[in-house]
Image 1 (tube, helix red, strand yellow):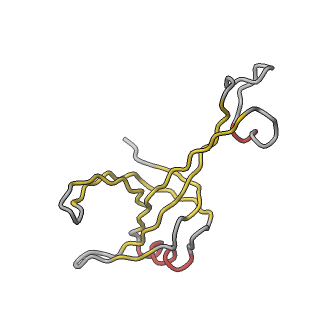
Image 2: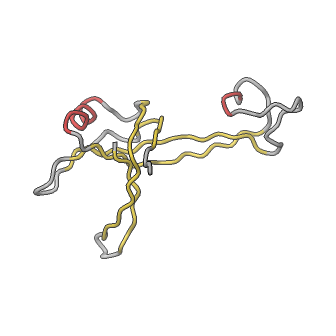
Length: 120
């Protein structure tokens, strides 16, 4: 089995470092990734070639739609955690590789919530 994710996007806010008593510190930040696609026509060009998202700015292919997805990134490894906290800033374009972690927590109103985190 494999649990691996690669993301390229922009940092949403300056990273913060948190430490829960008795546990190792963690650096946390959000990362925005964008998906773009053409709407209204088929995914094939008139010549029968397969359309590719990187061609959006090269050809007039119709209306363009975009979706932004926000990812919560947690960095636990000591060296990487500290470098991330010190040098990554809001707006930085970065590549993140890690694994997806699905967890549950109870919020301040005692409601059980689910959270998806990328562990880098």
